[in-house]
Amino acid sequence: MKRTVYSLLVVIMALAACRPSNKITRMDPGTTTDLSGRWNDTDARLVSEEMIGDALTHPWLNQFSRENQKPPTVIVGTVRNESMEHIDTEVITKEMERAFVNSGSVNLVASAAEREEIRAERLDQQEYASFETTKKMAQEL
Image (cartoon, rainbow, N blue to C red; front, side, top):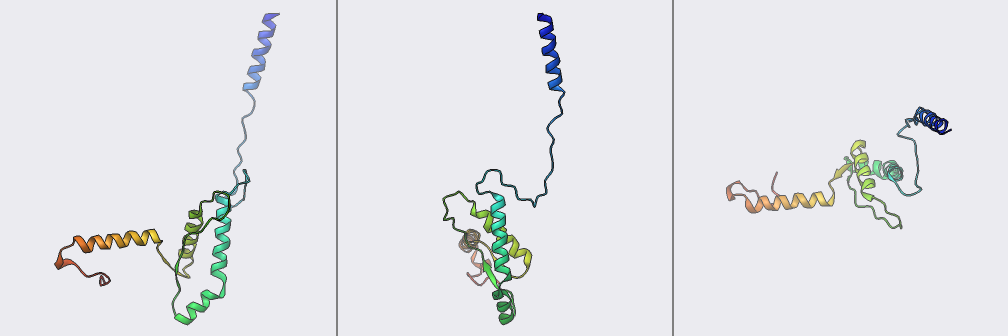
């Protein structure tokens, strides 16, 4: 009797081990999938695409280019999160910057942090360079 039970357990375990593995299906990257119900990168991408489309399709862009004979220069500021959810607003900002550069419709200025870093570097160069090789601030060109 014991032998039959052990044999039956071995057979059941062998059959369980031979079952087909989980099937993995690839999904289209453009497909929106929300597993958690919380804010995620897909939401950030959708919001930034809507903001970019809104900014690049309104008449201000063509009007500015027509009046000034050059594309406008744009600074993408920080996006404020006024909701209760944690949202990485830098994703939205970076997506907007990338889209503006790729569109070719506007000239993009570096972010405030990058501009501050450049200013500090120029100040260091002004301070530590020899007098003969130094050009005054705002006279670099």
